[in-house]
Length: 118
Image: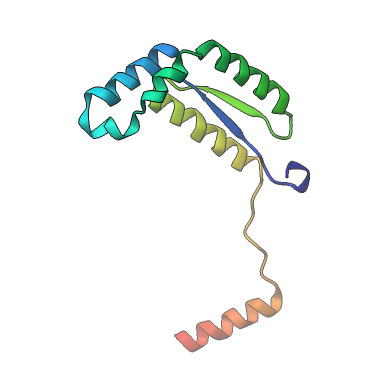
């Protein structure tokens, strides 16, 4: 995709083990968040170190200058959103986007439409 001119940005939202624990407890304790929790989450958490190793390997194996991974600290949601939004804004700014140019024939049709509408 990147070779075809598509801008590819991949974000890895890195939540710490302690923050994950806090979020799981919040999902258990707050009835409106119960739907977010699965008992399998706790079972999978026992494999934290293996997951971290797998994430690191996957990121290293799939990152490239054309399609980088942006690893974002995700313990604070406001900060995570700020980093992602800032990265997207910078990437969009680098595209040098322009409105399409209107040719002489299209300009003439616009002027004719204006006269008809006035």
